[in-house]
Length: 93
Image (cartoon, rainbow, N blue to C red; front, side):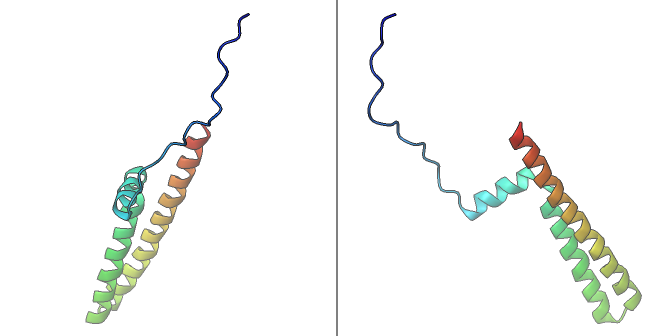
């Protein structure tokens, strides 16, 4: 067996990554888990409609919208947990 050339004495340079701004990170995270921003928008929409109903004096509709807000928040939380679990499972494979 003949010995090949010795390994280089200097370590290879580490890879460099481009700096990611807020907009790029937001778009990347939205593409990874699109249900979370959708749930946030639904929550804000239902909350706004409920507050407008409350201001107009329609207490029945206001109460219904506040209950719908809780449901929308639950959906958003479930989407967040589901996305985290999917990411964890994907990183293990």
